[in-house]
Image (cartoon, rainbow, N blue to C red):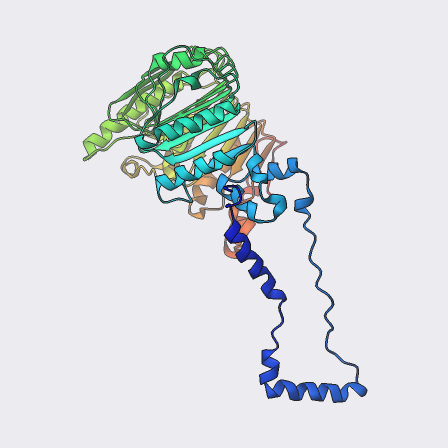
Length: 514
């Protein structure tokens, strides 16, 4: 009886609404004399002229092609929906009535419910009716409170009993302690935990785990070691806003990529990452009070993205200056540990710090990367950082300039910095260093035309000094895609100017998307 309750009232209202467009209402013809006179005139003239009134044939219902698809395809479609929408399809027809109960992917979000009790009741009801023996994905996103612990324990047991492949517990408000049976699971390949307490009593046995994402939780080094030792096939690890550690010893032989995303604790962070086997590293997000960031013993490291911000509250110019001195030390030590990396992505905030160091005539480490990506807003404050990166990257073959919006302005540099003179003072160094640059790719230009002078300065310099440059590709900007005439005209004018610049390389071509 509980199965039949899903959508019964909706089905009756839907059928009545669907029949309405096909009913005929003749009351207006019976009470309107004008209509009757027009009909008499039409009937009297029918002998002389053929009737122009269109004759309506029988109504033919369109074929429901989706419902004729095999169950496997329909279940794949339902798997792309959240659980709430998948359940709603049960009112479509008898063919769909209980099809959702076999869907292999269940995703519960809290967007449809105002109260935690309603969300929990809905999850309970769906799991009670669910019939699939194997789950590919089970995800719960809910505002957690301790009263829900017995029910969340049952949800986790339900997922593990169904040999779930991907398990996500994205909770908030309070911490949920993971049940001990979850630490011994040979089927799960991906785990995503937010606001969960990880405290295994014994060994961790995640023999199939390949991807692990941990958000907003305390992570001690001994717990991390247990997780890594118990996950022999782990390839991807993301730590987002995790605390209780300063040193990360990545003992895993299989881990290939590590993502460090944000840190907002009150006490300072002195981060050391020891990872001899990882090939890719990302340090992104907001870090409050970071005092140190070093990568040690990372001989296999190939690709690194440093796109983070060190934040600190300061009340006067002296505190601001101390803050940026600390930032300079962090960035310098970090870049010194990246000299073997072949592919480097530098975020705009790090570029700003390099600008400060360059204006103060502080040296930056030499890099050996062959592919360099710079995220920049092409403001004048970015120029010293761009110059510093190019000066200290003599082996770069591919340069990617990603123009983005940012509000990290360093207005105090106005007092000590003349961008044109500073840039020109570096040219003597660039001419001997840009010996390997073959490809330049530029993304995002055209969205903020007030930066075009800085942009033109950089492009002109590259064309004049990159001796082996083969191509410079400028991708289609937003203004060209959306047809704003004035902006398109400005972009075309700038494009013509770029094409007129002299090129030291005889093989260099500038490519536009039109």
